Length: 342
Image (cartoon, rainbow, N blue to C red):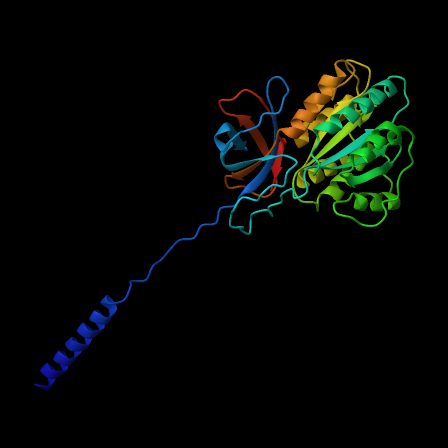
């Protein structure tokens, strides 16, 4: 009897526990997967060299190392503030940097009085004053000059009168300005380093500019108006070793370089540097000695046709990865960096 009584008590206890458990919600197990997203800055122009607005994710095909990367969202960057897409940041996601004060554009002029260059430079300076009409009132524009070293002529400003004066007078005849008090945004960090260690090459000047642009949010554009760089030898044209660092710094700063070649020639050896930096950073190279206005208009159109692609990449190891961005079902040209660096 005692054994039976014990068995009955155990059975009652088990039934009581079972009823209690049945009245509770079963435990739920969820799997959380954080997928990194990356930002890609591209420019798009139509076959006639005009900006191509209104593009959507389905209009882009992105491949990284030959593998498809899904385009999650697209933003057309104008002079207006850009809203950040909603996403949950992960450990692998780069900080979402968006332009909050209009576009950031840097003009870098290579000053040379050589007879094959100065007429083209003066022509571009005149045409650039006209192009100021295309900039939004929120765009921030800076002006630098390089002859034997990098010099700041005008820090980032929205004042079109100051910019017009810089193009009309300062590039050829003005003295370098003291950066003055810190401001936001500013190229002062580049000039602080320049005073300590001058940039005696265009490659190092581009590195200085990239270092100054890196902390600033959003994509940037650097417009080089000049005659080229590199060194001509019996082996051809080679770039200064600082160029590799400059390229990586420009890509890290989200800065694309657009080059307007003012040399009066159908071809010249130093154009190699201009072509290489434009291709590497997702910019554009244009000769200006023939149809100079059309060349400048094409660059201005590329600045206006600026997009930020929010992309889900395939699994990537740290390092440089081949990048290919094309339009899908649309006619046009996509200007994108040649590589994505994780």
